[in-house]
Image 1 (cartoon, rainbow, N blue to C red):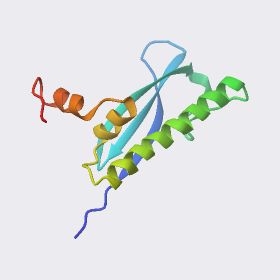
Image 2: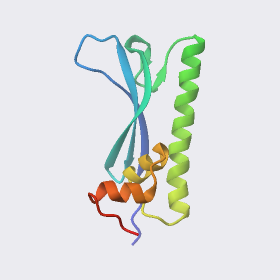
Image 3: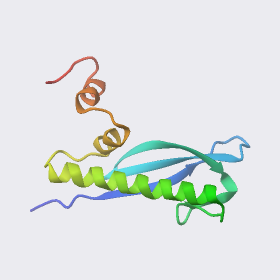
Image 4: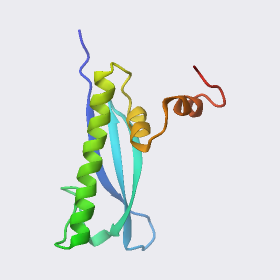
Length: 119
C-alpha cells in the first residue's frame, strides 16, 4: 500500500508580543506533518494583513508588489517540491526550505550532522 504524501504552504504574519505595528511575513512548508518556517524578509503594517487569504489588503502599488512576491514565493516552493519528487529524492520540509534558500545539499548535511560531511 502506497502512502499518500501531504504537502502544504502557509503564508503568515508573525506578530511580536510588543506593541510593534509591523509584522514579518513567513512561509511555513509542511510535508507529512513536519514543518519548516522561512522568513520572507518582508515587513508590513499589521492592519493591512488579511489572515484568511494570506495577502496584503490595500490598493497601493506596494501591496500589489508584496502580493506578487508572495505568489512567486508560493510558486517557487511548489516548484522545489515537484523537483524533488521528479528526482525521486526524499521530500522533507527542510529539503524544500534549503532549496528555496539556496543551501547546497552537502552544506545542509553538514549542518544536520554537526561537523561531519557525508560524500
